[in-house]
Length: 541
Image (tube, rainbow, N blue to C red; front, side, top):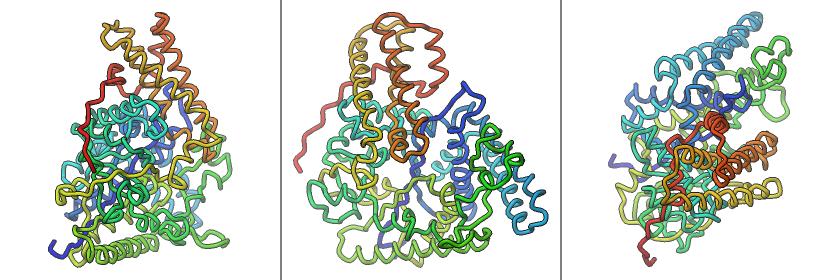
């Protein structure tokens, strides 16, 4: 370790919106979770198993959002996933027969069958249908640091009209993590990296030691950062802000200069769900007539306007090694440059959406595995650590307040508030104020069991309405009708519950129905919605 001049922190943020529809036999948006399990979470687990088997020393940080924790732990969704992956296995077996006169295609069909069989083995046999167990296991080995996020990924800068709403998102997220993982998280992923000055006091109260902002959040801090984005800032209350490194982000994110666009990698947009005859593919798409991605894709990115060439797994694997080595080499060069002038080891923080790895970039988990393998090589000056590790090694940090910022388009809040979605915030703010009044009203009052259930369900409805995913979808224009319906439905449910409390007209049958439909955050306590904020000691910068 003597030749290690600096550190690399890779953070994967695993999050999906809470989508669970027991009222239907099947539901399209639930497939978001099923695709992520198949293409992202299980491949990540497979890579971590491989690293463990080869005794590779590494540190990786994984942020598990509360909605994802709840969905991965849900028996209904676990059962539906097994049906989904078995359907994909049947499709792969059909493809082996269909492609018997096309050996290159049949080779890939056989690869998919092996992949699905292995996925079923990992999901069902090894981890009893709950992948949270797997992540806990890798955490216990000391290789994986697990952190969390706000309850429903609420975009905190736009919920800040009510401090109670922000506190409730943070505290409920932390409590959900503790319930399912068994220990408190040290770090916190701010949804969309959305920060505003003062947010750190709520993180401090929730027991959080560090969080992340985009590069300009540190660069434009209240005091010029002495070490740019390569060391954290102390926000004044011992909560540390780490910044995203722009260069390592571009290498993975950028559609122009990033690795995923390489012509040998698998093409995401070439899928047999859209290419084959409807009669053949019908049992494997939505309601047997709506074409969707099946996950079976036979082509590679190729290049320019050329016809897509067939995917070559060996060539793609070779490229993951080349690109991983290139990534490590560039981080090593940067660390060598930075270490000349810095008074502490430089720390390159590279945060990504977990779902990029495997879903959008099929080879991403293998690339990540190679990065961690190469980082363990003593011939370079880089080692992987977590933010928690860094704070144990370096204890004195510059004090300053980061600037308001996000990692969204143009760096601020425009992606989550614009002409497509600005109508939702007055409604969310009113519902938050109403919930705060209810919590105050019943603060010192003995509520009946029925009232308590109703108040708790009102908090759940509000949390689910506050998810940042819905305004995001409205801006991107993908499933706008569904996103709009989710917000309006949850707000309508909240308003009904609020009125039934105020008018003493609680309908237990309807309440039961809502508890089944929105089965989430079972331990929520409405009394905590307006829990008093501990006073912070004022510190001069």
